[in-house]
Figure 1: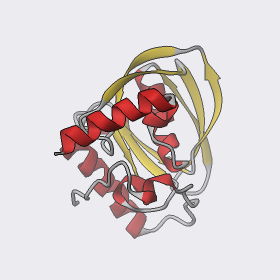
Figure 2: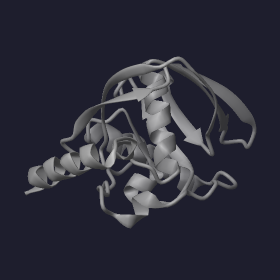
Figure 3: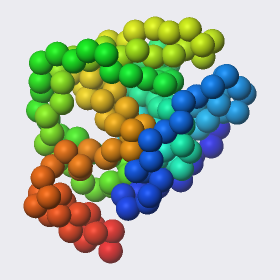
Length: 166
């Protein structure tokens, strides 16, 4: 396992719609392990392949932060098929370090997800897990959480982000 370098806001690779994952390979299994390791090292709850510069529809989520292997989720070619309710809470992103903003997300989501063997499953997430699924799937569509804000708020966030980076 290896910790990968996380690319940050402004890198054009974060704005690309990801390519679907094809046949499962040992290289993809290694990438998944690296993504879990990177999220843990960066103190994140999840990370998507585009955040390490790989244009694939692949992300990982682990709300247990490495404590419970059974809670590790691998998202492969995921698609949100149902949302219910709403929740408002703080959100941050490994690709926008130092920034946390309050954002509205669905309270509950259902995700169509491909398994490693190519079959499909439906995953459900509520509250923080729903937020994490939405956040990571946004990355796979080339969208950062800061893009949910209007231009004035986004500009303020960008200034704060650039100040933090200095």
